[in-house]
Amino acid sequence: MDLFKVYKLWDIEPVKGLDTTLWDKDGVEYTDLYGGHAVISIGHCHPHYVKMLSDQLGKLGFYSNAVQNGLQKELARRLGPVSGYPDYSLFLCNSGAEANENAFKLASFQTGRSKILAMGKAFHGRTSGAVAATENPKIQAPFNRTDKVVFTALNDLEAVGRELETREYAAVIIEGIQGVAGIYEPTTAFLQGVRSLCDRTGTKLILDEIQSGYGRSGKFFAHQHHGIKADIISMAKGMGNGFPIGGILISPDFDAVYGMLGTTFGGNHLACTAALAVLDVLENEKLVENAARVGEYFRNAFNGPDGLDPALKEYRGTGLMIGLELKDEYIGLRDRLLFEKKFFTGAAGAGVIRLLPSLTISMETAENFVKAWKELTR
Ligand SMILES: Cc1ncc(COP(=O)(O)O)c(C=O)c1O
Image (cartoon, rainbow, N blue to C red; front, side, top):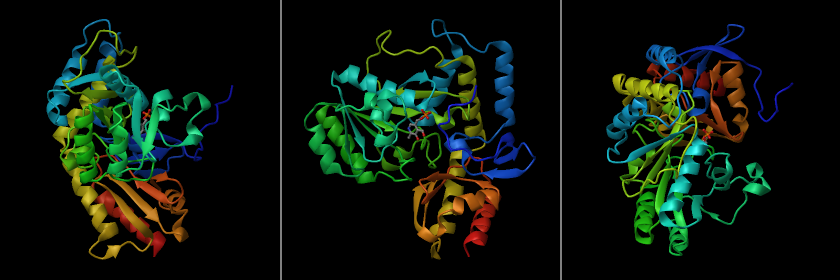
């Protein structure tokens, strides 16, 4: 049997990792500023994470959601204060797409409405509802297309107002920072305006913090830079540092009814242990603060007092969620960074390099990247 070939793969096979370093099967060393697509939040193979997961595996790896699970309760208890949503409740699942599916369902159950408003260029995942709310027809099968999802451009408050005034929408979904689109941020005025429109029209506000959350932006959630609260927040990626786990935080305005949501694997013992280990390390090593500090260094290096880097059309992002939009003559730089300088980075199309490193990244690693960048572009 062969694999179903849906991924374009580099011919590199990492077999070992430690913090922001990876080694491939031939022993070649790389620096990881991609974090396996914003997933590695506390570094590869953090010793505390490895120990907690190993210990839990020796006790109990899994049992179903039909019994008490103290690890889930502990995770909810810990997430309350650190997320800034102490009075919300937690529902656990296995991935980002699934978190958004549950967010849509819950908003629809609660409001009795069936439509979702999403933003232009949004990416919310590949399952049925999530991909319908993703503005990319290439990854929507005919089965996924629906008139229940409408898109308006990011930061176009008037257009959102026109749609929400129909009072047909269960929810608006907005990424804390748009990732796959190429790192675009909602403005404070837009988010605050959408919040008021939602309140006025009885629409739920869902913040997709799957990529931008868990400290990556320099605050626990990116929308917290804008002084608003969401009704539902979806999370995944950095939550388990690579162990599959997702979840939604749910405002106290929602009524839980037995059976309305559910999952076999969601919130299992290993997943909760991974998430608890991540929270321990985030707190003990002050990683949200580190994300803000190293993010500021990158901003200054690429778009500081000396002006915009000569290889760039634009620098976008906040904290460690960074989009470097290349001038046309530098397209291809991502491959050169990888093959000549051994830096893994992310991308959004050919023209944007995305930096999504572990929140543990040291200033020295950041400086090494800037040095390598300059060597290739000057
Ligand atoms: C903002 C956002 N939402 C949802 C998803 C989907 O998450 P998953 O791949 O875990 O289903 C992603 C993944 O890249 C994402 O960036």
